[in-house]
Each structure stands twice: as structure tokens, then as C-alpha cells.
Length: 287
Image (cartoon, rainbow, N blue to C red; front, side):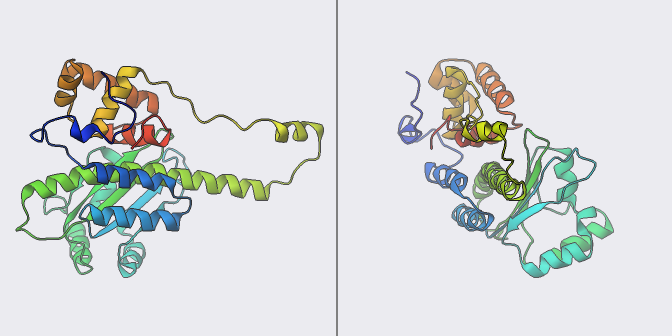
């Protein structure tokens, strides 16, 4: 029998030997970001979720419509030191920052390390960042369906004694968090833009305007996912691998990947985690 839309009972459905990549608590915390209505609220909530996942600081930047020749400015939120952000802007570090270059070329997360900062300028950049405590971490890009691109950078405690598994878990959680902040920030900015338009545009006292004002509000974006696509996304949201989902649903791993990829295309997303976060944002999945 397929799982219900609620994810709460999913972690009790399989033996403890089947490990998940992130806990239900973390998933529900990430989902709460979608309820934020301001950038300040989102910053506070994202910092709380990031801390609960083991991250010391975060910085998130979103650029709307990267294909536009006008290159809209990057909207940023985060908890990186203000002094570092001022230094970064003053010295034009965005032009040599390997994490920014990576975001435009790949959908994969980039773990910071000696092999990342290769040129003399990038080595100097890394040394300057280290002065502000930004030594260990990774950056995860997210691409949206409307040519928007975001990058989440997360700082972890630089403690070599920590087990490797913790770092692997943090990487998975960081990717999940990036997708949810992307969705949440896009919502906030879209709402702010609509409010600004409403203030700036004077009302036209015409019969057409009156009829338009009385017309029902447009329905929320409608995306139809099949039952199997929803099942696969639901179990994936619970942290199950494609192989595990195949065992649960009695289908092949390849079929699971097919349904998730098809759902991602319908949702206009480029990754499994982004598909999950967008499906939740649209109310197709529940935490």
C-alpha cells in the first residue's frame, strides 16, 4: 500500500538497519522555512535550522534570471561576518571566488579544500577568509525553473577528529537546506515584488478595472504528479535511496529514478532535493 502524504510515520516503516540521510526533525525544520514572510524572518529561521544541522554559519545568495543581459543583483541573507562581506565586496572577490565559478558550471556541491583554491589570487582569497573563521565547509548551488540561480555556503567546525560520516551527513543536509532556502526566498521576493507593484501602480477607475478587481484570484500553480511519482518523492523525502524505494514499492531502482526524474521535470527542478522542496512548497507533499 502506498505511503500517505504525511511523512511522520515513514521512519517507523523500515528496520533500523536501513539508514536515512537526514532525520524527520531536520526535514520538518527545513519545511518551516517556507512559512517565512520576510527576509529577516527567513535569515533567523535558516540560521536556526543550519545550527541544528551542525553548521556554524551560512551565506545564501540568489540571482533572479541569470540569462538576462542586465544581470540582476544578488539578493543575500546569512550570518557570515560583516567585516568579511565588506572585504569581499571591496576587493571584488566574486570575480575569483571558485565557489561562484562552480555554481555557474555545475549542480553539484563543492567542498572547500586546497584543490579548490588553485591560483595565487584564490590562495590569497582563502587565507583572507580564514582570518574570519571561514576555513572548512562547502557550497551548494541550486537552479530554479525561471533562470534563477542560488548558492548556499555553509561553514562547519574545522575539527579533524570528527568522524567522516558526520561530514557526509552534513553534505546531504546542506543540499536539502539549500533547496528549501531557495524556495523560501523566491516566495518572499515574489511577494515583495507584488506588494511594490500594488503600491506603485495607480488604480484605473474603469469598468474593465472594476471587473478585474472583482475577478477571483488566480489559482495556485497546478502541477499534476502521478501516484507513483508522489510515492517515490515521498519516500525520497524520508531519506530513502532509490534502491530502498524500489524494495518498498516492489519496482526496480531504474524505475524509481525514472519517476523521480519525471517529477523533477514537471516541477521545473534540477535535483532530487529541489524537487522535494518544491513539491512541499506547492502542497503536493507534507512534512
